Image (cartoon, rainbow, N blue to C red):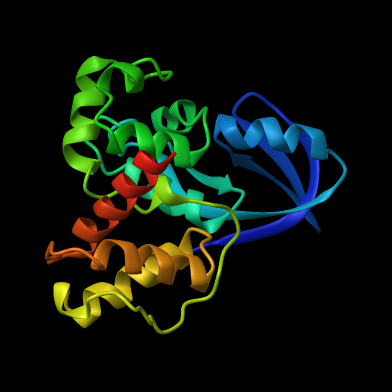
Length: 217
């Protein structure tokens, strides 16, 4: 498993870039949102978080190893989740990721099939499948604020009896993983735990935090 590569950007094409990783040069598939940022970094050292897969099928007789690269581990995690939908393969997912992951996740979270269907390669039928399968799985990505923080123990002033300790802890970790500071994560938990609603799962709590943030914007 190749999970990270570091090298000099040699060139950036429509769907992939060439990275000099001495003594080799490797081609890495990238999403459109990353391409726009990386095309200004030719000649510079970059770090890409990668996934490795085999392209092709056994019936065709040709199997080609491929690397897919992302600017951070959160985008890579979202891409892996995105590809879990029937009919959304690696190439289609990369083409569809023309906007930041946070924006794409919000479109899914809001069940905005009409907007989602306008993304490259995503028609209405595929958009409906994406929303049906991922709406409860992309909440944390919709809360991305930038930067990656380390996991730590969750402390909150809210009503802890409104959720099991492991639900609070895992929600706290999910918020940190998409760039919230410890104080921001605690504050978000305090808000949703201050009411009377009970939260049985991390997805329930993430949904509540997202809705609270969306209404406040």
